[in-house]
Figure 1: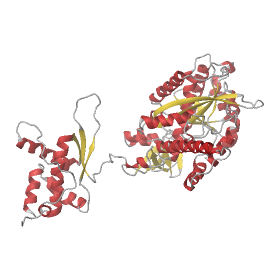
Figure 2: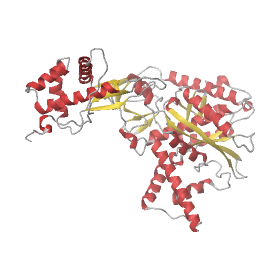
Figure 3: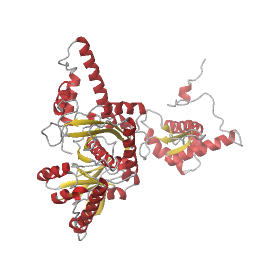
Figure 4: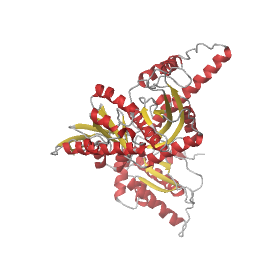
Length: 328
Length: 208
């Protein structure tokens, strides 16, 4: 249990220590939940799709859609990004199945890929948070704030990050290039995106070094009961999900820009940096010129909802959204 | 004068036939060339999808098309057709496959019976051009993804939004030139519809 690894001075953790600690707590909790399953029961999963429909007998509470894909072919394992349970519920590839169900595997080229695209965009934001925490030197504390829901038409995925020691930072092209390199390195590590539901107390304990997340945890818990966490490598973050199966499914990507967002003087968040990027799945081949159009668009400030409410140009961002959708 | 029309003697193929046959260099000369092609045609009928060099693939394709076309035209009671099938198919069970499987499959087909697709080639090598030659209607997964025009694919969504954004910036420029600065005219009816769609589909903001 997490009580065993209580740190008395957790308010003074360095970024790296905090990451390791969160990762450790995640591992312990995952192990605990796995052991809680107890006596193994079997469920029947009816698979629909190519090469042919079939029934798989899997372990209740342990087997995931990913395990089902491994019974089929390597192509299913590599290309499936999301599972569709009973024809209606979108399920993470690494989330255990709990009852008899039908299963369809979704990749990026299915006829109706909206949900897969959203999961992809959400995962990209999540990974952006992961690489931003490791991209800075130890002297720069990085406090992740949150990322808005996936909006693909806005042209870029976003993570809002608090950098308390950097007052007025404008990244040079070289710095952006470095963050992009970190992002590519993370994706190439071929890591699974793990999911875990934890209680409110444990989530607070895990994010004790991050004041923003500590504030968000109770409000999320009051709405959804539990807190859903995701892990890639040793990075753990809160997200509603679902997410895609593996970081290797993220192909071409660029971190395009970082914009400063200034909050109202009486608000609890004074300023945030909005990291923006654009990425495509590995299976998508796009001409570099077309991709450069997407990158250029991603350089502009993304007007989706932000926790501080205004951009550094002094305009309220939420209103910006409304003007864009009403007139443009 | 009383010359018969060629198209009544031999059926017209639906692929492009070059004027000269290829030589397909080998030790035994023309006979060796035919041996090579017979092997390839047999392989194509047996496996239904094969990968080979372009020149041999393209040459064998013409003979395979001719054979299927004759088989459909004359059926299995026609002696010259049967002889041709016997000559081109080295494995004799494939003759049954030709008349009992492929003829029914292609009877109502109004395009070519085979397709030839460029295969990937290792970069920075001097290897010859590779192709994949296949019989249509084979049981394998398709090689060409025809769904790339799907509007909902992520790259198409992104490009469409970028295009829309660009067009709006142009409209804004035009409006500024004319002198209307306060309000941008809504464009066409189609664009408005799309805007509504965007609001419905993508502007649903959810926490995290």
